[in-house]
Length: 186
Image (cartoon, rainbow, N blue to C red; front, side, top):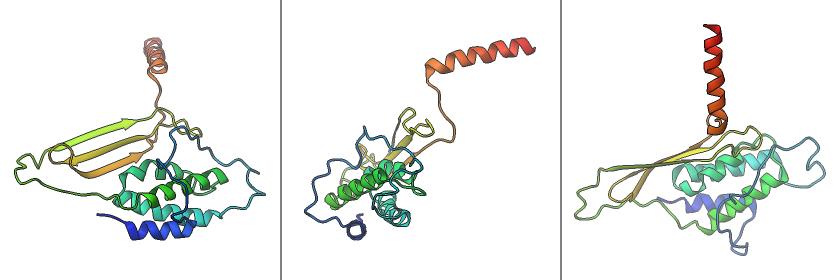
């Protein structure tokens, strides 16, 4: 399964061609995106918010159906769809450039001739700690594979929980305070 035609359409909206520089990954892990501050980028000329949403929606369609390698970057950029800054637009252009340069990647489901382990379910998950600089919330992700040696990706997700997680260093003293509070009120 691939979305080459959709990727080419989104790249045309951004103006990306084969002459653009090489994008090694969809988004740098060191990039720090923040909300646009009032007055920031007011004088600069960049694409308006509705174009940002249109391009992001196109690449989000591709990411959700056939390109799990784009999901985390697209979800991070979707946080700023109502008021994108020049930094967000440059990051979106990098994601689209990466998708365009790797447009031949696709999901492929295969089964070997002697694959008697084809119904085995594999799962993996990962999380970051407080990576959203605006809300201090974490990002969590998961992947599910079916088959021998994780050969067929069948489901993936990247999301931001509704609650803010505390580190263990902070959580333990707070739990101790809660126990003391319960004892005082008892």
